[in-house]
Amino acid sequence: MISFNYETDFELSDETAISNWLSQVILSESKKEGDINYVFCDDEYLHKINVEYLDHDTLTDIISFDYSIGNELHGDIFVSVERVADNAKDYEVTFDEELKRVLVHGILHYAGYKDKSEDDELKMRQKEEEKMAMFHVKQ
Image (tube, rainbow, N blue to C red; front, side, top):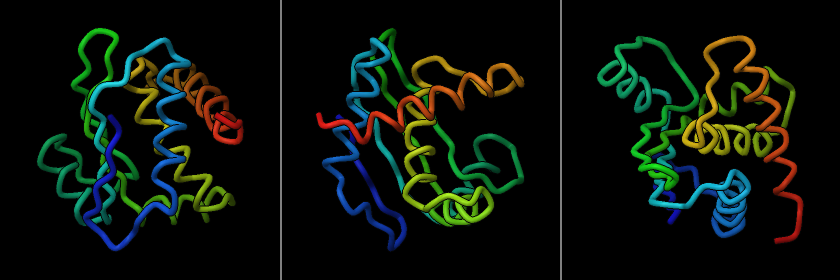
């Protein structure tokens, strides 16, 4: 089950559509949907997690904790709404488009995709684009 939690004033406009899309993304990777919790927060909240749990003193748009078991995806995905908004401006895309990219990015990590090397990052970007295109398909 995909759930959405809010530690900021932001709220998704259509949780059902986003949840259905992410469920389809999981199936398209031949994975099973477990418990996936999204937590929307601000920079300060996510920075604190980044320092405390990952020992990274930087701002980031997403941190995911993967608790997957075999083919069943489980985890907590923290999203800084402030970073998403800033990145959308930097990349000259809409907030909604950048948000979808970040949301699916966490799922793709759970499905086994990495983004540490240049090749891995390219593959991750291609998968993000592929999965974002699925949002426009009638389920």
